[in-house]
Image: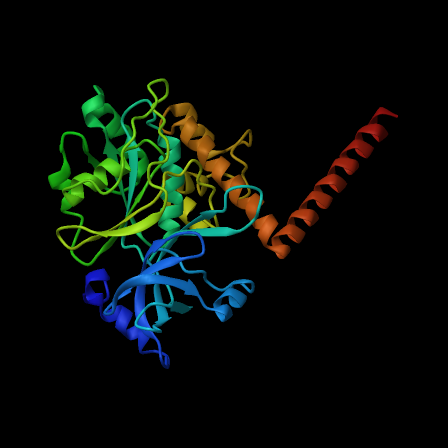
Length: 359
């Protein structure tokens, strides 16, 4: 087995040769469990664990191995005890805020060329969720493409396609049915040999069925979604790279019940570039787009050229990023405290002015 099978190319070679690395060889993380990884390279594939120095470095913010990473491994006893010593610099990474109250990032997929954002055309169809995925995807460095699955179960396919194209902002949108095979010829044109593609979406959108059809046989179990709300249960429990018959590398991930954004400010701007363009036309530079006079955004909403729900989602994601920055950036927290203090001073001055007029 050659490392070329796993996407190794001239860029990877240049990164590897940029530093001295004795007694280690390059490999790619092709599967990830709890505290253990499967790595593959010219040596074949085997399980691996993180070196002690890598674990210590993680406490200081160093990258923790994720599926898709290129790593430096030490092969001992012909691969029986393999250790990951280093994570090579990433070309792209799809991240989210770790689920729960902990303020930390979680890398879902690394070194991805194309992210297939899968949405179902049944009752789980959700434009606002796709906007959230697009924002994090544009931030990741990978190119997004939207896949609308379950066309066989939808009578308004064309209408929903047009709705999705309006929020895609240039990202390609493909309609498929993993059940019948509709649209797969068009989808497979995007899956070039040696390229890494990640399947992303919530539970029940049909990622496992898409993977099985692309592979030509069953590699992931499939469960039916609930009839009441078209929601599904996790069938994929681990992140893993599959080599498709055409040579593309497909990274399957468990369904995401929630995608909390992480450092996605630029991604939000790109996803909502239409809103950003309108905001630049407001009379005041610090317009809050609520009741301020001369607000171009509110004028567009009133005219019906901007969807209010899209506007509200844009503001929601912006607030989410502002909150996160206050949590992870001490300077941002300090700036927010100063802003609140200045606001309270203004309020006090306003009330003093009112009291003096009344007296």
